[in-house]
Length: 207
View 1 (tube, one colour):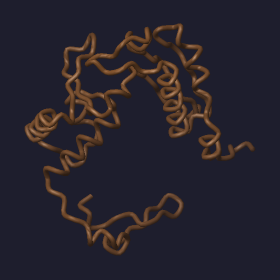
View 2 (spheres, helix red, strand yellow):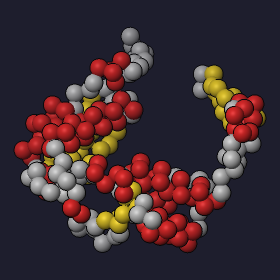
View 3 (spheres, one colour):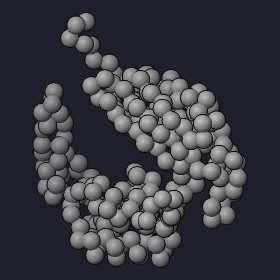
């Protein structure tokens, strides 16, 4: 984790380590990253992965290395002042939510999903679209209108990709709010051929 060693290959489930400069010779030509730049990258990667998050979410996402809360708050404050991070309000939540400004157009609602790895099934418990998208209205902060069909297709593609990532052969869609968007989202959940080709199926013990 300090960068002295790295994993250069794997054999079965065993990692093989080597010196970083031998595994990745180009690393010697790279510039040394400052602590401030690394913290900014750390926060940017976390926010991009989660879409929107509270400060406790950020502290629990990438857990190495551990940062002092005061350092994280200072970095977030600087990113907000530069316009890189936006503060959000989530209905029913008293917490301050944060998101990358560049990711704001992609926030088309909330998804509650759970992977059942033994059953190889991704359960999508609830997909909640914001009212402005459901009614094809104007999003907050004066952004231009988003195409509803394009947004639904994007959510479907993301869930299909997640299903492949967690090894889910089946995606079970439960609740959609508003309910009238369920049928279109179900159609959008069809796994693209490019993703199907990338799936790897291990034979069961009985086969």
